[in-house]
Image 1 (cartoon, rainbow, N blue to C red):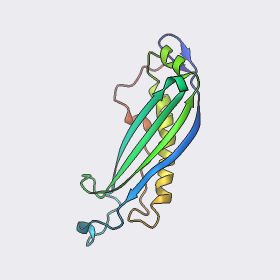
Image 2 (image 1 turned 120 degrees about the vertical axis):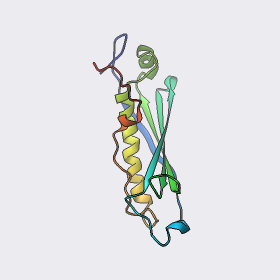
Image 3 (image 1 turned 180 degrees about the vertical axis):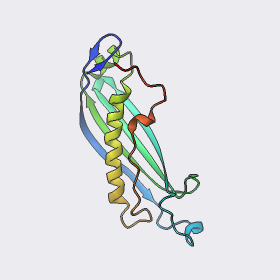
Length: 154
């Protein structure tokens, strides 16, 4: 149970769909990397989340786009992938009303974590036989994507 400002709200979800919508990767290394090769330790990732909430449909959608770069400075993009998770949240409109329009970070982070971990699996499968084969998307704490100011703990 999550504690709201007016009372307690029980939040539960059901995964409706988790898809890989896009996967693109360069066929060959850019010319500046041909002589030195791709240093797997230097590959960087950029994570972009978009969250859509449809309270009347009890629906929350998490879109995750991950861009892959050849170096930590993120100058040379090697590819990208996009995944989408669709979740049914029971009584979402009522919960948002009780919680003053904001779902708890911990709850949303759980949904992001499901999309993120599945996206890592999609990447492993799709990157085989590409210039990114053998590279792993790092495991991350989904709470790291929220602002530093954390919600009050109950």
